[in-house]
Length: 168
Image 1: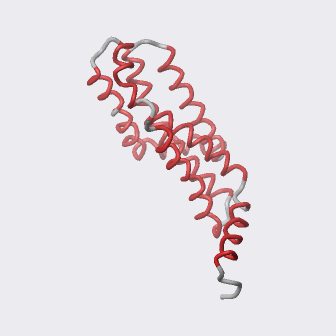
Image 2: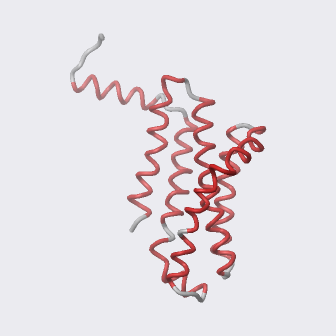
Image 3: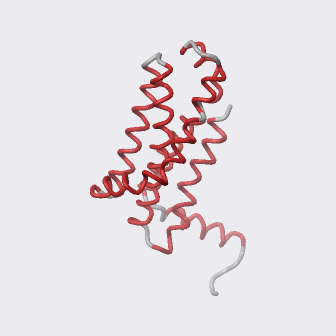
């Protein structure tokens, strides 16, 4: 199909294409890395959170698993939320979800209440799913069809990095 097929030529071609990934995608990598690491960082601190909240570690672990309920609720509520937020465009969905995740994380750290912790973790699950939808909306809106695979691959790199860093 033309061009050189030497390993050096292939590496140069990959480097050139990675430079074509838009800046907003690299910013999304940083945001997704922070979000994913935050979610994963709860697990090692179950006993500390249990002491802080005055409940058993099992209760905290069960509460952390509530974020999966938030993930599961998004197929039901997600279309309505994205339709409401979609008026501002995909950037508003992504930024709003990021701010909501930050607010929930701050709430967990600021309030020593098991009920607040449980609600915040449930919201983290739902809002994390909304953040994923916002990211995919941005990919669709701002990336040419031929470049979407590469852009998604770069953004998903953050998920893998958060597994390395966020799980001690």
